[in-house]
Amino acid sequence: MTKLTRITFNPQIMGGRACIRGMRITVSLVLNLLSNGMSVAEILEYYPYLESEDVYECLRYAAFLSDEELYPLAPLAIA
Image 1 (cartoon, rainbow, N blue to C red):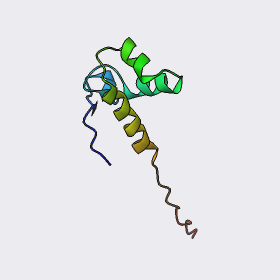
Image 2 (tube, rainbow, N blue to C red):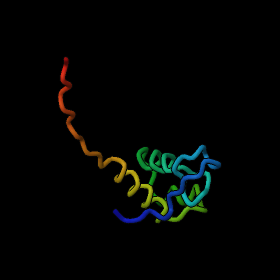
Image 3 (cartoon, rainbow, N blue to C red):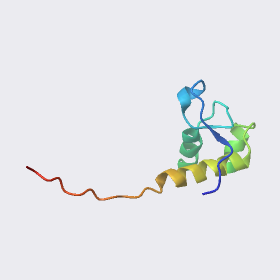
Image 4 (cartoon, rainbow, N blue to C red):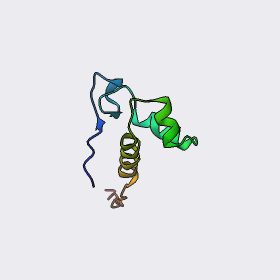
């Protein structure tokens, strides 16, 4: 996985949620805007202090989190 340099975690900012470059803009906000049909250009217009790479890194972070692997558990032995 590519190193994420724009996603930050700080307990003093938004309760430690994933944010963009230490700002009070959460990854979940950006992902919600995208999932509701907003374009990258529209997001950048509403949040001019964001950069397009911030938005794309939010998508990479979401892809990383969704790449889950399932490990079947062995059945429990009942005595």
